[in-house]
Image (cartoon, rainbow, N blue to C red; front, side, top):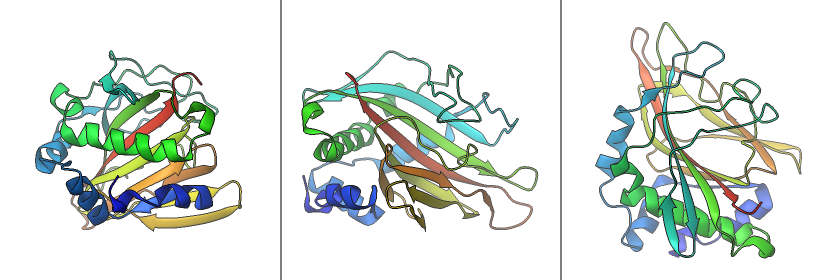
Length: 243
């Protein structure tokens, strides 16, 4: 793997998470001849479906979903399936099978999708227990757009500080448009410490140990009154298939 990705495993072991600025992520992708056609990939966030499962009644979240099997032999998309979390991890929308619009085929097969899944699988294999490192991953892909305007605030994590109920999580910023706030907050259950930073540039990425840390994002609001704004992110979650 390129030098830009080296050392991420050490940061995850030390802090429970690792942050990689977008410029370094892009440089690492380009070093591996990855990351072609970012514009097409990012533009797909303009074609998401409304999240109709929001128990708070909000209509500020759009999304698409897909599941993959990722392992040494490569990455294969699974048949479309519901996304499920227990209320132990999602007190707002848990204990419900949520059938979201599927990720478009051309995006599920896109170089960026497959490259990012491959990078995550490599990074998380470095910090996973040795006994399961040869096991394939069950990876889930979530495309999110959180909108905000005068009529309704945008809440990237309406369930608050949380775990996702998986092994590892990767959050990639795709775009911020006309918004302020949206601060990522991380609480380390091991050291009882908290950190906060804002994903501001495309491809700003954070890798999370979901068993160790909780994470959340503060609500967003438009930069200018009377306008609307949005925050686009890609969330990839990983757990071993045999766990």
